Image (cartoon, rainbow, N blue to C red; front, side, top):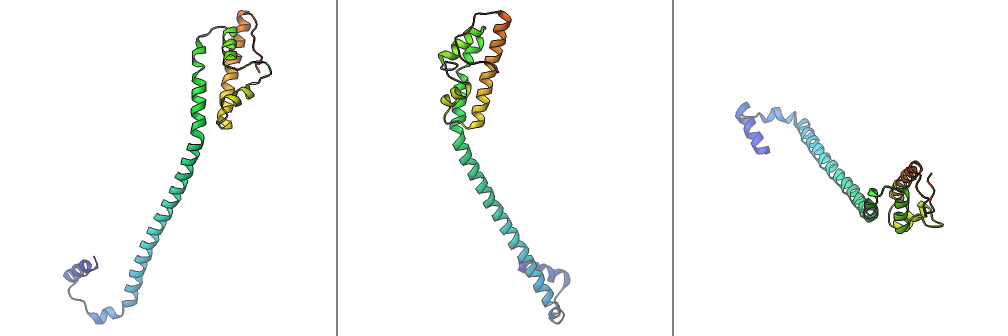
Length: 158
């Protein structure tokens, strides 16, 4: 590349007078060194940035591998309740939940969800618990409106 640049310069400007170039040697050397420093810094910054990205991606992969089984368990757990959405009475919903082990004597939504999802992170368990309580609350309101018979479960809507 340097040879091509020199050849192009000779073709455009004609032959160089070496006596005139001697006065500019330090400036030319400083320019070449500056270009080398800039190129080296660019390569170093790119490589350091790439290493940082690799570290971040590695930590994110570890986090996903740690949380994914719990999220899959929560998805599977919640999908089991989809069949209960067609039940129209409070009694039917609470009995269905009790058949699954929820709302039985001396249980709370927190204990039931923790027992059902031991590998799931706290935030996901909180979401599942909130959704179950919401389902229970809506069923309870439905019961109040329809004056259905009392349920056999132990949970109380909040």
